[in-house]
Image (cartoon, rainbow, N blue to C red):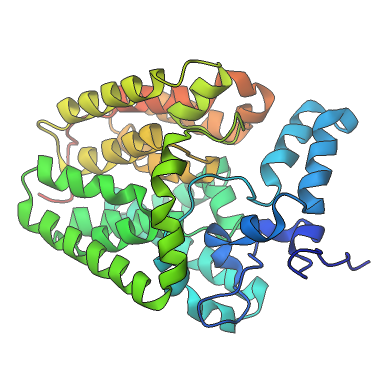
Amino acid sequence: MRPAPCRPCGSTWCASGAGRAAACSPSPSGRPASAAWSNVTTHERRCGGQASGLGRARRAVRGRRGPRRAVRARHDAPPLRRRVRAPPIAATALDPLQLLPRPAAVALVAALSVAGTAALLWLWFRRPLPVVAGIAVLAAAEPWRDALSLGRIDVALVALVGLDLLVLRRGPLVGLAAALGLTPALFIAYLVIARRYREAAVAGGVAAVATGLGWLVAPAESGRYWGGLLERVTRVGGAGDPGDQSLAGALQRLQAPDAVWPLLALAVVLFWTTRLQPSGDWAGFALTGVAMCLISPVTWVYSLVWELPAVLTLLDRRRWLAAAVLAVMALGLVWLVPALSVLTLIGLVLLAAVPRERTSDVST
């Protein structure tokens, strides 16, 4: 039975609970948005939390389902109250996808993500059989699986950054990822620390140009996004949502004072910089991805695909640890023991355990 449309916006998106796959907000050109636009939806401003999909999730949390399904239902609800969204340029870049049917758009993003993952695995293994086996293993890991099923572009951004840092060594793809996802801007800082100044300048320039294009194409959206960014960042964490596996989210679940998060984030940044000096290209790529997930104000489970390069670096010397990390990511312990913030702890372990060099770095 087709659900009744949402009263505030006239869409069946929130009523059907299909917000994980598509957004109901229009694009800058005025047409309905595609599946990959879910990270820049304006549904929050329109509906103000009246979506029936979120209501069903709240009723489930009240005890009508088991504990794991209840918590998971709350996370799978439409992203009405997520505090940090992607910049408007991300919507502009994905505008052509709205020409496709919704399932086709999600399938296309998933195919690009799988291709990017295969490229990264090839850079590490250089043999086809381990690449195929690696994709099969990653399919069981919740971050990678969620990113594909939700139509997220995070996996593709990981591949872009990895290709630029490890092979091209030019900087434009890092800048593009920073413009589309904002938090990957930490890789520009990594390039400065690694004394790859020319690449850092190119990456910064590309990010600035792409952001400027976002202002030209969607000035109103850009003004609202950048104007309210500071407020959203200072109100850290996902309001105790177990799907938020950043340091801020973990501290909020522990009900720690707000002043603790900046101190811990600063400590993580300092430890990250010390681990980068010296380090190979793979280690820098992996360590920066882990640090980015930890210090971000909000890190949803699907964003933890940025930690998968760190798992790869463990295969040289600490395979048992890599297997343990993948097992934890596959078991969904986030939902079984939400107060423990398992994946946040995994991030701290990875930040300390990633080897600084590998036997055969692709850059050599």
